Amino acid sequence: MPRLFAALDPPGPARKAVNTLRTDDLDGARRTPPEQYHLTLRFFGDVGEEHATAVEDALAGVDAEAPALRSTGLIALPSRRRPRVLAVTFARTEALKTLHEQVEAAARALGFEAETRRFRPHLTFARLNEADPQAVVRFLRTQPVPDVSFTASAFHLYESELRPDGARHQRRAAFALEGR
Image 1 (cartoon, one colour):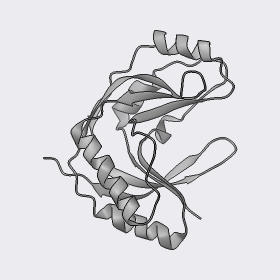
Image 2 (cartoon, helix red, strand yellow):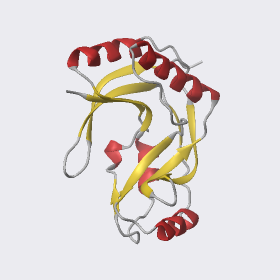
Image 3 (cartoon, one colour):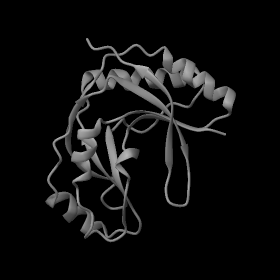
Image 4 (cartoon, rainbow, N blue to C red):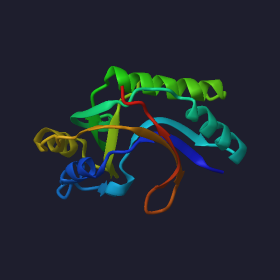
C-alpha cells in the first residue's frame, strides 16, 4: 500500500547550502540525506493503489504559479520543548500558499480529511532522538541560516517507504507549475 505525499524539490545548489548545517555536536541528531530533502505540501498517508492513481490524477489538475522560495530561518518541530526534527523554514509567499491550497483542495475532493495543522513550509535536514531541548535551542541560535532561494518549476507526488535506517522517497509523478 503506497504511503504518499506531495512535495517541492530543492535544486542541487539549495541542497548543498542546507547540507552545510553542522549537527555534529548535537547528540541524538541523525542527518537527512540531501537527496531526500523536500518541502512537503500535503501528506496523504497510506492509500490503496486505486486511490493512489486517483491522487495522481487529481494533482495533475492543479494549475498554480511556480513559487519562488526563500529560506527564512531554522526551526525545531514539533516544538523547541519537544524537538524531533530540525528544519530550514521558507517564506509563505502568496504563490506558495496558493499552491498548497490547491493541493489541499484536490485532497479534500478525494475525501481526505482536512489538514488541521497550519502550513509551515520547511525542509527537514535532521531528525532528533532524545535530544536535549536546551542544546537544540543553542544550536538554532548559533547556526547561520543557509541562504537558499529557488523557483520551483514543478511539484511531485512521492511514495515513501519506511525502513529501519529512515524513510526512502521514490518519485511517482511530476506536475509542472506555470512561470507567470
